[in-house]
Image 1 (cartoon, rainbow, N blue to C red):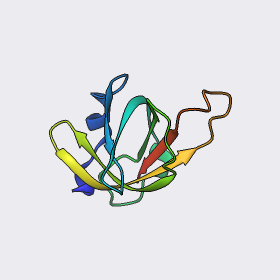
Image 2: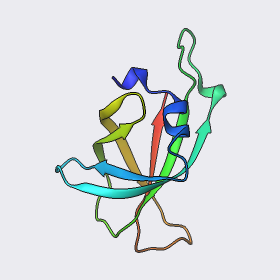
Image 3: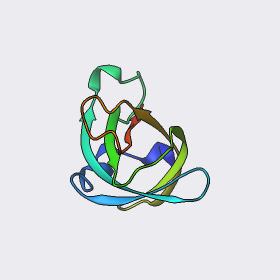
Image 4: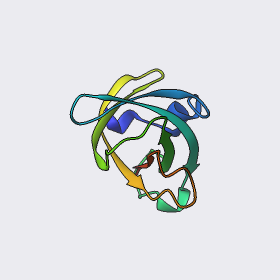
Length: 103
């Protein structure tokens, strides 16, 4: 199902909150912050435009990275999305900041 994920699925979630299901089965409330398409990263013969999504947790978390699942419009629950933590860099250090890349 990951191959079906397009940037427009996240476009509808920008500025909204949702739940990220972590590898241990727990859920983390999140806020979707930004979406960026990266056309220069597009592979030949690949229909999907590469893009990335950044979001933050709404509560403190020790989660760093791993395969998670997320509810997306039109697709439902999408599993095996690799989520990576990024440094807070001047933002609230009590929250987690995350990044997903779709190539």
